[in-house]
Image 1 (tube, rainbow, N blue to C red):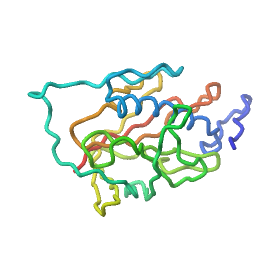
Image 2 (image 1 turned 45 degrees about the vertical axis):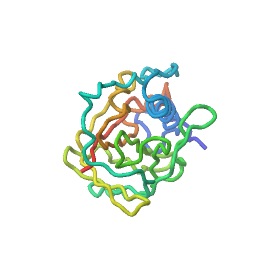
Image 3 (image 1 turned 180 degrees about the vertical axis):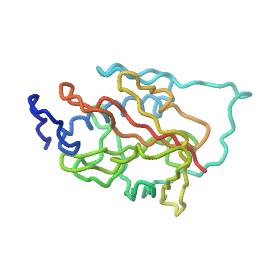
Image 4 (image 1 turned 180 degrees about the horizontal axis):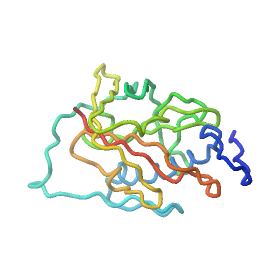
Length: 223
């Protein structure tokens, strides 16, 4: 169940893990729409408005003569575990799907050490953009991506796969975007290279909106 938000009369904000889970629900709804637009429709159409300010933009297209080379990549395989040594993450994966509501299902909110990947999209290591997302906190404690913002360019993380391989990714950048100015096309659009986006909520908690104000995105590529 959701935790009750702090009273407006409180002087100090409540710890992050005491904030309502609705923020995670809103975040996952936004992820669902952009992922559906890019992964299922190939980025050719913009999804309908959801009441949020950021939406997916059509994916860029290239002529055969200008299409970038795919570079190093792996065949499709289900990810089984995410390891980020710098921030002590060692978490299993759960597949995420689109629910009847049209929203992307979120990992269980009460499991603090769990990450999700959009299973109908690109798997980590395949050419394209693979989406890996996790909670920053739950109603009771910090969660798996609580320290995601500590990553820097050049840091590495690893995805263990069901085919027995370990895919190594190198961080290109770590960026925070206000939800009113979220670059959906840049984050979710398909790429010829094997890339990953690690995504979680960030910023301040807006008590009125019952949502975090920002999203944190880690951009990375297969080494």
